[in-house]
Length: 345
Image (cartoon, rainbow, N blue to C red; front, side):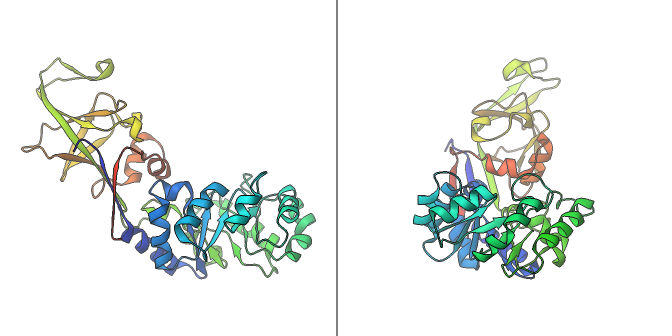
């Protein structure tokens, strides 16, 4: 089969959620935005719900619709972008909880959907989303009188435990929220690992569920195997691929595999990156093109049908390091052309 095979281990996702939930002093939710970080929310969200997650987080209301369809009634689905213009019908019909980010959103919500649950997002210093301290001070009593189901903020530097911004944001969040009755949430995966002071009543594990850093103890979740279409022997002085980007200095056995940047494999992976054949590392040659990658398999005595890009030998963060990005981008870029299978269902 000349189609790349993407395997997603639902049992590993559940185990990663359980491990992070056990570290959490309060309740652990689950972030399933961006189609569960590219891995398929229709399968991932029910697996997390079966493990015990009851509060889910998405980026926009439309994502919440997909999660509600996957989960049915019951679990709470919070929308980070809040109540945007035109969202009222979706929020009402699918019982979503907008995390309102401004006075304007607050007014829009209570006018369009009086009595409908909502949460509040505060800006504790990241300057991205949420009400700043002055705005919150003006709205606080009115908002709290409406009984928000959650009050949250987000850490900017949680992946760097010693960064002074963490303590600053913790102090700021406490100053804005101490004394309120609503449950509070400050930490995603990185914040959970900072310790109980950052947990409050609800945490929001995200990338750690899917095997990404900074949760170094996460079980691997994805395996991506790329099929070998053809092999050839390249003589010294012969070039491989677009732009003659690789020229052989010695006799080289080259395998061409069926995948490329149209599948979310970043073009920058060549020439720094590798595929794996069992425990043998095989260097990518030339350029990653739209549908094909060429690989040095000279060291192999026997060529397998597939070479591994992600799996036991190479994590999403290792691939991310090779192209100068982060594991989030590698995961969410995984393309639609893969043949997907789910393990541990």
